[in-house]
Image 1 (cartoon, helix red, strand yellow):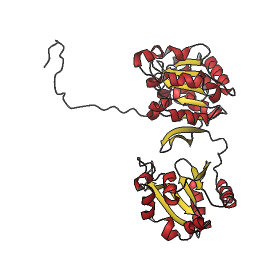
Image 2 (cartoon, one colour; image 1 turned 90 degrees about the vertical axis):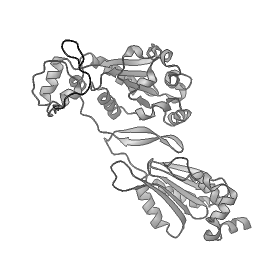
Image 3 (cartoon, rainbow, N blue to C red; image 1 turned 180 degrees about the vertical axis):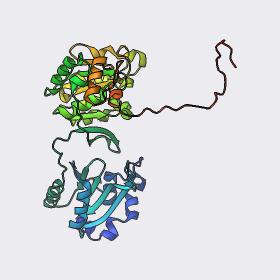
Image 4 (cartoon, rainbow, N blue to C red; image 1 turned 135 degrees about the horizontal axis):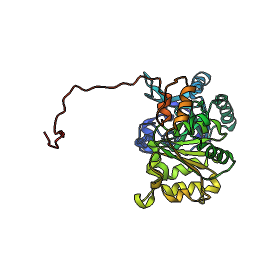
Length: 380
């Protein structure tokens, strides 16, 4: 008991004495190797108190409002605090990305503003204080807006792979108007299978850019009553990361979307160690019974280059090649959009939706430099 009293008797002399901190562990351990968050909350806690904490995570928290509440409600209890700021997309000044509060006896609050979560670390503080604090934190949970679709974007964090909830625009998409007639039955099969609880299997969507693959995936994400976990192209290499499986385990009965998946789904014989095996494990391997996750892969490459194992019966929910809209369909859609332009050839969805935009052509008056082939075949 005496040791406990000594520990908290003076926050100035003991709690944040860096000399004593560095005697217990290397101060460099407190810092992350990356700059996404400059302090490791668990190392920081251990450095200050010299014991391992208990830990509670609260997710989907409005960290900005909660931090304001903490600074006002617990002003007299805050012993110390740290923060980091970063420039975010479209921000004109650095915004707070992480916050660290030390309060009461041995509580540390870690705010991860980017992922909308709060860590509560503690060991010897009375349970009643902890529960009271947690109840107040939970009142700041974000509520999903009605009729606003979300996807869970996979992101790399100092703690491993995690998800970030992102609002998406619900598309005004009519399947019959925006896709060729042969897609209607394929869509019905895909939609029915993806709507099943605890379903499994793979959907392969391929075709030229601008033919409507992404629009269709957005349509599925906005209308299916399942969580959509989205792997961005920049994280394609993480498909074999063991931490990805941990994230998927936390989100069962979901749909896992891999967009621009060329480098993931190509034939293993041509690519050596391909991540195809990881996809197969998730979709119908031993892991599948625990995960119950369905997979959608979209890509531009030809289907002949795709690993045949992905297309076996019982594993494949459906596949479809998106093409330009046939002339009658393209004309109908153009008229419906109000362009009323004569369509003389098949067109991509992107081209049709931008018919009203001015085309910019740049004429070059600069003479070419180097070798040019003349009509007579001579190089000059």
